[in-house]
Image 1 (cartoon, rainbow, N blue to C red):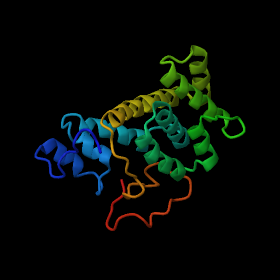
Image 2 (image 1 turned 90 degrees about the vertical axis):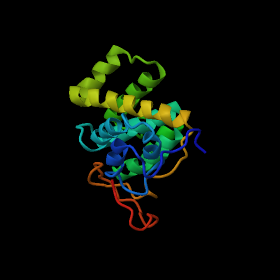
Image 3 (image 1 turned 30 degrees about the vertical axis):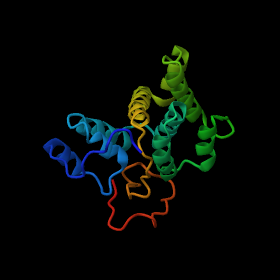
Image 4 (image 1 turned 135 degrees about the horizontal axis):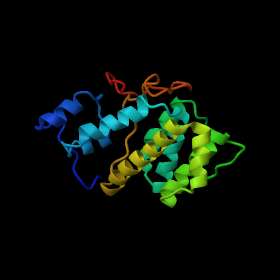
Length: 203
């Protein structure tokens, strides 16, 4: 059970009500926890929406980066949510399993993926990646995608800190009908949503 109570499903604060009204029901526990912060829930989720639906970064690189961040920071909640999104965007099980085990092999990942994962690893573990690696990633991805990749890692590391600190109860975006293949940049097979609760919306 989470250390901090989840916000009321019918909050009195107008700012929270306005944000929650845009979100699908049933809402994942992260949204319910962030609703305890009326000033920041809107800006926090808007940045997350931009990362997941509007940025130039290849969604495969985005999801590998998020999974690697979740693994390195020990954020199980983040892993559970994004392994489903990773499958949605076409990442095969070998790559997901490799990140889970910390086995990043050239036999499994292409050069762009390996460079991105190395950057994530050094950013989380060391705090400051070597400049040679930064230049390599920029040359491979371009400046825009490099900066977006760094923002992705920072955003999900920040959320992970919240999740771990409050002991957020793990739920699942798939079970709650929140996987919208088109909006999330999906290129893989759509997951089986037969377990989705009746009437659930997609994000």
